[in-house]
Amino acid sequence: MKRVVNIVVITLTSPLHVGIYENNQLIKKYSVVEQTSEALPLLFQEILNEYTPKGLFFARGPGSFMAIKITYIFLKTLSIALHIPLRASDGFRFNEGRPIRAMRNLYFIKRGETISTERFDHPVDQIFDLPHTLNETYFSENVEPLYMLPAV
Image (tube, rainbow, N blue to C red; front, side):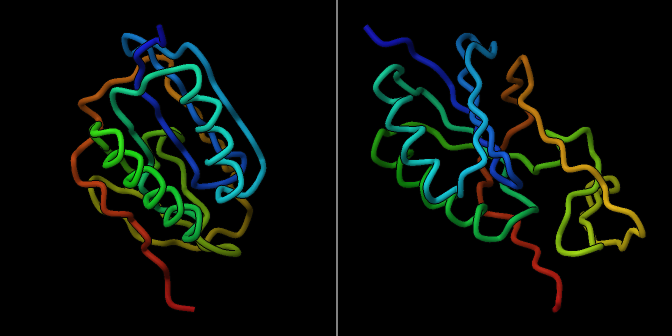
C-alpha cells in the first residue's frame, strides 16, 4: 500500500524543489536543475509510483514566468485528475523573505502584503528551501499565478 502524502513544489528558480510530506513532516526531498517542463513529469512519474498524494502545494510566484506557468498548469491538471486540493503561497515563504530575481538587476521584494520590484547593485543569492514541517495554514485556495512581469 502506498503512503498517503502531501507534495510541495517550488519552481521559481533553478534548482527546482519537490518535497514529500507525511503527517506534515518532510520525508523526502528532490532538487533538480533541469527545465521545469522536463523535470516535473519525470519527478511526478516517480512520486506517483511510490506515493498517493492527498494535497498539492506550490509557490505561485513571483519568479520565472515560464516555470510558474508550467507548474500551475501541471499541478492544476493533476489536482483535477486526482480529485485532490491544490493550494498555494507566494515564494517569499520559501526563501526567508529575501528578494526574488525578476531579471538582470531587478528583483521582486515583499513589504507587508505588497510585492513590488527594486533594483539592486549586486546580485542577491536565490536560495529556496522546503520547510521541515508543512504548515498548511500558510497556503491558500488562491492558486492564480503571481506572474508580475515588469515592463521591459
